[in-house]
Length: 170
Image (cartoon, rainbow, N blue to C red):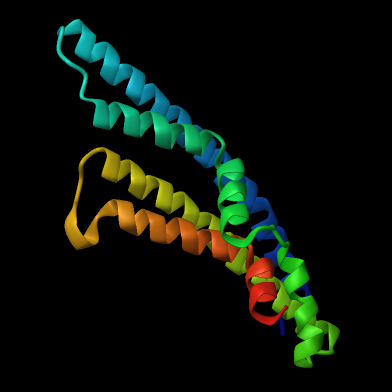
């Protein structure tokens, strides 16, 4: 029979290592988007054509936001919630809810950490959807812009799960 405490510890270690990996992938993706914008401008100037501003500017804006992915999300969290509260602070509400055992509190912290991890993934997908919108894909009710905005706001709420719970119960 597996030891649940070791499982919780391993899960925490995995997620704590995976979140910086998402940041690194976002940084590299931002560099690719900026490089693509420069390539599009170079190709257009070689053919002596007008550069289509939407795709180039969209690549530059989303690329710059991806380069500073963590800062972009911190600014989004500050805009939505006013302050960033760590997921561990949300576990403080567990004692108010009556979860007194260390196992229950540890399980809650692991679950909140996974919510934070999913928030970072959602925010990353939101920026990718904004890139699709900048490239002119989609439109109407299923526009990538609005889907991307939903992913960014939802991702910010998940990343700042402590602040979200504080706003509900604080």
